[in-house]
Amino acid sequence: MPTLGEKVRTLRKKAGLTLEQFADQIGASKSSVWELENKEKARPSADRINEVARVLGVTPEFLMNDDVAEPSVSVADEAFFRKYQSLPSTTKQQLQDILDVLDRKDGN
Image 1: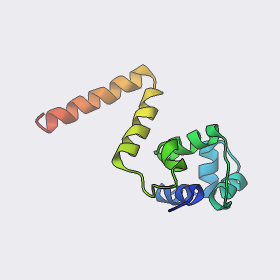
Image 2: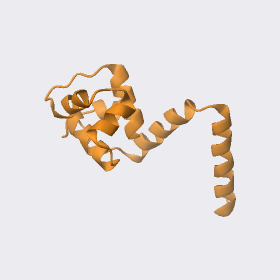
Image 3: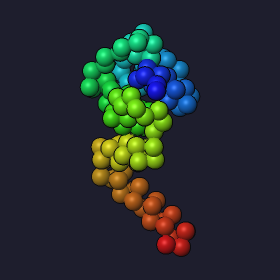
Image 4: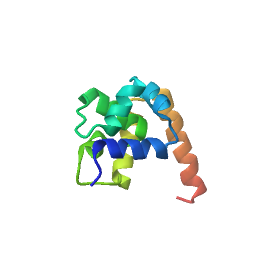
């Protein structure tokens, strides 16, 4: 099973982010991201794990679970919902309006 670092590296590359871009997005240095991805027993803080998960669109639980190699649909859904919860109410309303339009388009 993949380590935390392997998961982070895989997801970062899948997102098309360089080490530097990813480091900027999580508020870390490029060298600390390199260590996270390559150190055998990386021990990032809970805040860092939460930020990494947010940027990569997964949950912290997925990142820390050594028994799961790929994020499931439910992991992606939960990550999306966590991001949604932190949005301003105007943005939430815009998303709801978009969903309403899509529902009508699909005939629901």
